[in-house]
Image (cartoon, rainbow, N blue to C red; front, side, top):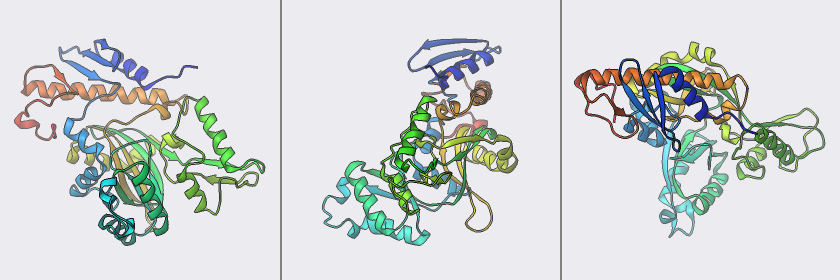
Length: 366
């Protein structure tokens, strides 16, 4: 069975916006777009490529992203950068006695458990753990050093609803709520069997996830609820299987663009106007721990993916096509402004940033 792809929708959008569209190379998708005013753009991949190289590099680094947002006074969770490499812990008989581990534990004690521990670079929820207590921290850190060493960021675990908001030059184009992966008991099947069943159902819809029913993440989240993989849920009982809500881990997107526009348009304009981020998927949690709803920006993705959203509901592909249409229009507008102050008119958006014209200092970052 064939499924509609992000590439299909981007090509559709390009055909609708540009006077002429030519695919120069199919893999990766390299296209030339010609516009009525004589301006032409090259795009690389099924991406609008609105952001500058500097913005893209910062957004790929979660620690740097948090530092920039904090500097701008935008809401972020308390965070701590940690190096979990074999070299750092090679001579340690007890990892809990290393300076790196002690600093991580001190951060967790200060903000309070649980905390999230995630790779500083990476996506799709790989090696992201919700650490419930000090004992589990030691186990998770030890496991990561052995099988997935690298640089990580620890963050205070905000509690509340989580959203992905797609923003093009300060305007919210799409937003969806991430419903956490859960299973419904039938009084017979174990939780592990229910998760496997859910995963097969997702795959039939073209959503090939990172979900593994016997993963440590699932075991720990179930244990926090007094459950195990071999537990049998009573008929109709609903149990959340994972704490993180990445679509690549089986979470379900629920479109809610208008509601989010009404609540967070000003915040998203700030990310664009003060942070110089032309295009992004902004991950936001409405933290309710204080008794009031406080928006917290968890991450900014400068090149958000749409595969799981597209294949979650038949009404979703046109929404993504509309995002691409607006993003291509924005790329054209940006190129026209650059063209008015700088030659040549051809700007390869994915390779180099041209010298900055004096009046475009806010437009070109990095």
